[in-house]
Picture (cartoon, rainbow, N blue to C red):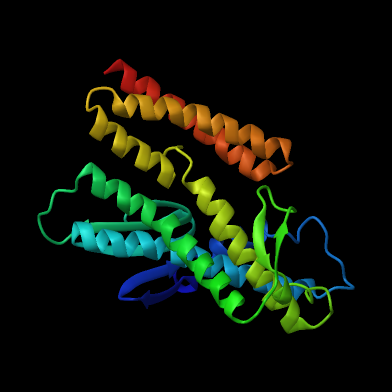
Length: 260
């Protein structure tokens, strides 16, 4: 299977894209529920896949460069679903690293590195919207997503025109903004081991070394259960199952922590 892994370097950081990542792109695409042969849906799917790839790379690159800055680390990025040769599990994207010099990370630096992924995604979306504004685009709010997002209408209006490039560009813009804003915000929810959960545990340990982590894990269980219900109520079964699993996993971790 290793021969099918796409490997390259981005800003000096090694990147490995597993074959399972492309399955993930299709599984979370908006095209599975309805495929209209009259529309250029295949080009839309390619645009969505390109947006997903760029958004995930930008997110993980934020982690990698922050870890390199604060931990003096040699980071590596992997996208996909599975287990890496070093034993690291990956679901979507993961940045792993090892220190190259002795520098003890603080709770504050851990929290910043965890936030840097979503922060890079937000900056990417802001740069795209700024470019659209400078190009004279008009903007509108899309209510077809779980949370409203601002979109440059001039680049989206021709999505269903039948022109391949229009469909590709439209769904690339829509997908990049949707993933960067919505999934970036979801990833900052205080659910361990998402970035927000790691921020919560780091800050909890900083504020209260004795009970902070336990409080953060309790919050993680509540938020994971709430997100599982949220996605289930909207028919997103895959995401609902994922957060239901995290609810169980965090409850088990909390129980083990309480016995110590």
